[in-house]
Image 1 (cartoon, helix red, strand yellow):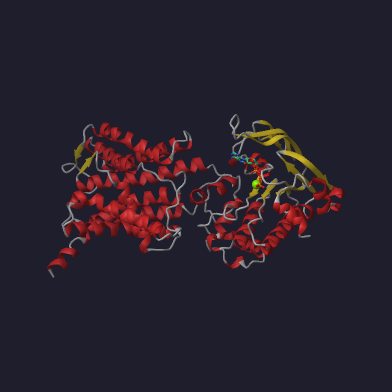
Image 2 (cartoon, rainbow over the protein chains, first blue to last red):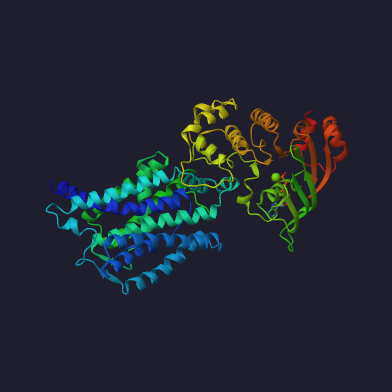
Amino acid sequence: MGILSQLLSVIPISLEQGFAYALVALGILVSFRILAFPDLTVDGSFALGGAVAARLIIAGYHPLVGIIMAIICGFLAGTATGFLNTKLKINSLLAGILVMTILYSVNLRVMGRANIPLLTVKTIFTPFEEMQISRYIPIIIFFFLVTFASKIILDLFFRTQIGMAMRATGDNEQMIITLGVNTDRITVLGLGISNALIALSGALIAQDQGFSDAGMGIGMIVAGLASIIIGEALIRKKSVGWLTFAAVTGSVVYRLFISIGLRLGLAPTDLKMATGLMVIIALGLPAIRKEKEGKLHLRGV
Amino acid sequence: MIKIKNVEKVFNRNTVNEKRAIDNLSLEITKGEFVTIIGSNGAGKTTLLNLIAGTYIPDKGKIIIDDEDITTLPEYKRAKYLGRIFQDPLMGTAGSMTIEENLAMAELRGKRRGLGWGVKKSKRSFYRELLKSLGLGLEERLSDPVFLLSGGQRQSITLLMATLSMPKLLLLDEHTTSLDPKTAQKVIELTDKIVKENKLTTIMVTHNMQQAISYGNRMIMLHEGKIKFDVSGDEKQKLTVEEVVKKFGTELTDETLLSASVSR
Ligand SMILES: Nc1ncnc2c1ncn2[C@@H]1O[C@H](COP(=O)(O)OP(=O)(O)OP(=O)(O)O)[C@@H](O)[C@H]1O
Ligand SMILES: [Mg+2]
């Protein structure tokens, strides 16, 4: 029974983190899956979200202001990558890496130092902490609501005229160009939306964990990819609503794996390696099995 | 309707691979004409369509549609004038999207897209009617993703999509070549029907000389980026494959062209 109750005890933390990081998975879904754009801005825009929110909160602004500004800055970071790729014709991978690298300096400037503690200031979570119940319950509900609201908004967006043009851009760019869509503009917009979601995640997670750190985005892209891959392995339906649902589910399951791994003795320092290996296996398996489908279809690489 | 004036396109200029794909070519097509284009591999047929569509910008010359100079207009901005179908049946539709989503996107060709619903429920019966006209039973499959369909079915939908917004000019590049003979025949007949019913100005590239002669009211033969032969009206009606082969046999080294004549 000992080990079972130990394993059960990881469920609350997995749900909390799973829903919190699901926003990153949704963002990566928009860039990698919908737009077929391998956007590596992620690690930078996640930390950017945390940095902007933390800086504004300790400057005395309402946490909501910090969160909204984080979303806007994330959006701008995504559009920057989009511009580098579509206007300056820089390779998509390189464009993301460049912005991510630049953001590292930007984030340090924004924060004024490498780390801002938020434990003693009023954050979006302060009201929950003051409740007389286990802190997990309201926080899990909060992240669940934010994540599912984002999922629903994305689902609705992808059924609009612009949203459908975005899906077509990733699916068959030549076709949607011949239908009169400026796919450069659509790509920039999509990357903006993607990184806005990721920065929102960074802003919320910084407040949840009680600090913002310049290095908090490292490995975020691989973790997000792992979530998407797990989600798609569990849920095979391919319509947009199911894809977003799979990303959220995948994120929760991924965090569950991680938490169980840690309980079973996986060293926290080996976490990123384990995640990386997981993604390599998932992406490499089709090649070993000589399957064609299942391979990530990406533009410009 | 469309005027192509002294257009030139050279690939890999000043290298050993320099290729004059279109060589000082001029061509005027009037409203309602259905032009078929033949020519052997590398004659410049696809390049000509690419120049009209804006995939490439010409090195020299002008392209004018209805008095508007579109020579350097970006590809997506020309979409409002053009419908285009490629040889590859996968290229005309978005496979992960449903039939009705593809049709709805085509209906918005060249129009401003906003945050309104992409597929309007009120349009469904119209889409069903359209699909019914194909006679492929697709009217019951509006919300199936397109990747489930066969090449011929996809190409037929592409044809509907290309004509849905009544383009000023329809560009077809060997759009039946990669289909099996029976399906190809169906798609070409459907093309002819749609073009005639809607009086669409059309340029159709084909490798099949019989097709080039039987369909359309004008035929152009391209060779090394130049127009070698241009017939229309009665003269075109009376044309036979044998005649063309006799006249241009030396330039028509292409297998499909010759096999088309032999199989007759
Ligand atoms: N993007 C390109 N870069 C370099 N050369 C090209 C390019 N596109 C076409 N060419 C060359 O231009 C010439 C004309 O090509 P094009 O594709 O127009 O021929 P085509 O008449 O369509 O032939 P096919 O019947 O084989 O389709 C060929 O020699 C081709 O190799
Ligand atoms: Mg060609």
